[in-house]
Length: 199
Image: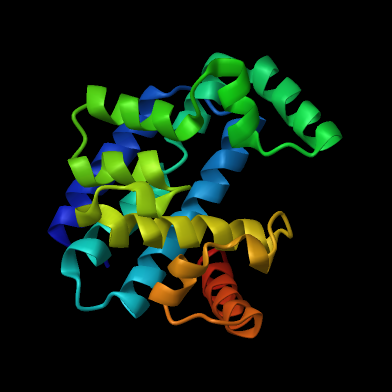
């Protein structure tokens, strides 16, 4: 499914998640979300970037590790994360915005810095760092980051946490998606395929 390079990268993620400690309800939710984003990333890469081997090989592991910074927040300060979530819900504030206000840095940057410290491949580091802003990433990794961005957004879209208008139109265009109906079709196919893996 992911090739030799992908298997090597997958080992980075397995070891990283072991290092980050014991299971908590918050970490279980993050792990579940990350598994879905990984699956979606791989399938988006395979369907929309099939000729770009490097993207297909790296998509799964980048999707799996994209929220590593959130895992760190959850591990080191679970009570703070709970307060963040309560404030977000009450004030209708995006988590990234709240993280920046409180910590001066967001989960994507925290995850990327950990990836640097642990000597992850540059592609993985950049996918973690820019998964909310793919077109700010270095040009060489934009297509891979775009895949992770779309996979992540689609999981939130399914949960009604984001609307169609909140997707970056340029990102959708790169996958030939120009309408809500097309996005719904992609989301439905990915969701059904992922559900089969959970049986």
